[in-house]
Length: 484
Ligand SMILES: Cc1ncc(COP(=O)(O)O)c(C=O)c1O
Image 1: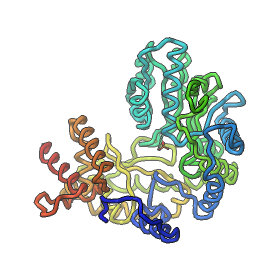
Image 2: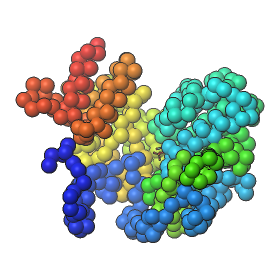
Image 3: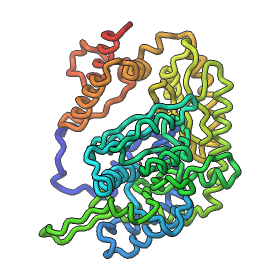
């Protein structure tokens, strides 16, 4: 059987063999246990993972669809929501639900405010004002729910330009967004100022704290200078905070909280005429994964405030060490002045192509996320990264030295591809091509694209080029076309 000719095996395979196959499939995955991965995995060590597995496993089949069926799940959800409300100063009035992740929480906020704007202000052409650095989940929400995303530019410090926000809101604005912090550069928008706009114009303000929800409160307790950003700001009407990020839970857990149940009501879905019964759903999903909610509850309970504080202390120590070390490497600079354990760095010299640096870091075993506008590399620190911070800096210095003065490295490998795609002027063409590539990835010829193959692309190969090579060829052609 070929890879593209897969069907359910006629006869089941012994479970132990299937498990061995799974292990084998995972061998090329990013090795997060070696702490060389940033942002994809929030790993607190094997003991914590085993603990989550037990909590998750116990509720693997439990379904949170009907809150009246599995009372245990409703209890986990209630308690996670209440603990989060307490942490974020929502008091007893705040109300919310657990969701499957940050994206679901963001999508729900868009849907909620669209419906609230429609019900309370008769807004038919809804718009939302979001910072340029808003997570892409908000663009997705805009597209899915037919709400126009109006992008507010940034100030020099990379926080959203609140004067611009004030000018961009209009009668159709159903919500304003601020991030605490934003994903690309770890900057916290000025929520206090956004709150003033929200109050003046009587427009809901959502704070996307999918990242910061479970570490900013502990940074504050540790004495870091964290500006107020949560429900203590009077204009803030809702907050999203992901448990599967900095509450170190299993994948599939986030919280969306509203200042009051009156707002939350706009999120609910009820259909009373279905032959399957009267259907009511608090969030986006139908079946809701009990395991994820149990693991989130378990993780928060096991860490306790002291655990969160200690984790945050270590993260900040690692992040400060990394930022200081990066600032000391010639030709590199941190983007903006992030105060959080999330940040990006860029090259300030033509001699050093930052994407080529990423390629070199990957040669040294690091899994690196590339950003664009500006070209930069991303770092999201978790507590255990403290163990590898010095190694990262050593490898980074070596990588920069290797790349410096070798312009050819910018035109090969991942650097060529990312560089080209970030700078190609016709953005709609990039979108079209990526859509085409996705269709290939998820179509019958499904295979994985490995960007590093770009350099190996050989148009004249005798074999039919695989998807990776076709992608690479496309990039190479585009690069030629747009060479200046
Ligand atoms: C600020 C912010 N919002 C939303 C999301 C989306 O979260 P998820 O990937 O869990 O859907 C992320 C993910 O990193 C994020 O950083």
